Image 1 (cartoon, one colour):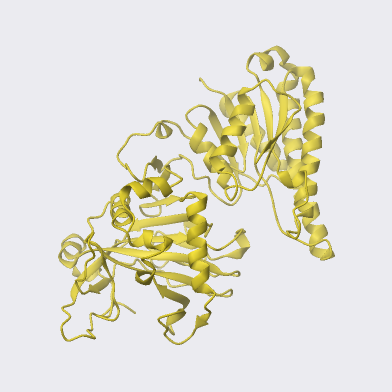
Image 2 (cartoon, one colour; image 1 turned 135 degrees about the horizontal axis):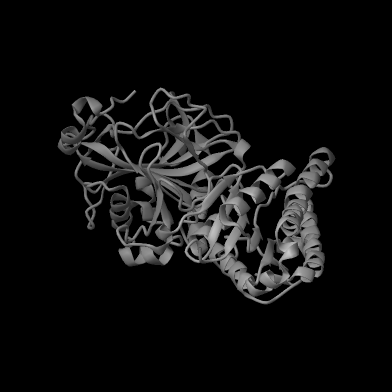
Length: 260
Length: 235
């Protein structure tokens, strides 16, 4: 597992940008040193080369629901390789720090692959409930485990499991394995001022440029979505979490968005 | 106002953003971009170190004057030069970093020759047009001042202008950058009359082979050097 000193050795760009519009977010390009980024690409491609599955699969990228066209692979299964950096304590703490959230150590995430021709998504804010069973590692990181309970509903698959409800605190998208990107390729992450904005006209579009990221605290106004893509689009998406009580105290119970 | 006024094209790209991050505290940068907004200090933005977010950074003391323009439109070229001269009364450095690179096989004739025209325009003609505009409007009558302030042009080329990388279908890109090399060499010869230097930097692939920061440092060294008419390879 990577320690903070390891983050210093693999981070390349130490000048990230914090922006206030259309909502508070941070962005960075050239995030990792080239050699480490190449390891991330290699790990991602090895999984992708196993092929895509429309039916749920533990071994391959698969579609998690008919309502979402992306193929996903559970980030928690990538803890031993380079991609494990996103599940490390150091990364968790850094992400919490730069997004200004107090996080619980609960981490959920996935590798995402969009085939060309994906449509625009629905604008949403990610302030959703998320359920965890306590199985922290030695560093206090508790990865979402669908074999123990459903992330969205808390429905248990084990009699002994005691699901605990949290709310998403911060989101991060890291782009990789996309190759040279041109504006017509699409696949950007659109950021919006309002939930009813025209999805085709974000106030800011974060381009899926390799080795770059965007991250933000999940709030009732962190409106964003996937924009239609014409070339394959790949990313790592992860969330940190906060106690439900903290989210309700800050935003109100009705601000926590129900799952579609 | 202290610091050189640097007009940078391609300010929204990887290289341009890294240049702004590195030199915004040393130079007064006017950054031209078309589609990608520069990742550089501007209103509503600030830099921070992800491993020490509260630490003050000198980069936040400075801001980049961002100009959205289509450099393949001659009217926008005029506008860019006018805007920078109106705001700062001078241009000391021109860094031509904007580029178009598309893989296309020569055998794919329709696409290739459209790309060849587009890349020759943005990668070779536009840097020369912009330098010529600034020379005609400002530099050509200020020889002693140019020499004293060590004014210069840095054109960012590529090692693809010097050799063939088999199988990558970069003929249009390589040809356009080779044209840029030679245009810069002749520019250096002509601009010597009014003491403005012009050099070419030809880096290999970044950030894959060399770090973008190394390319930025190499540009900085050319700006501060007394070299003229040279092609510097970075690999």
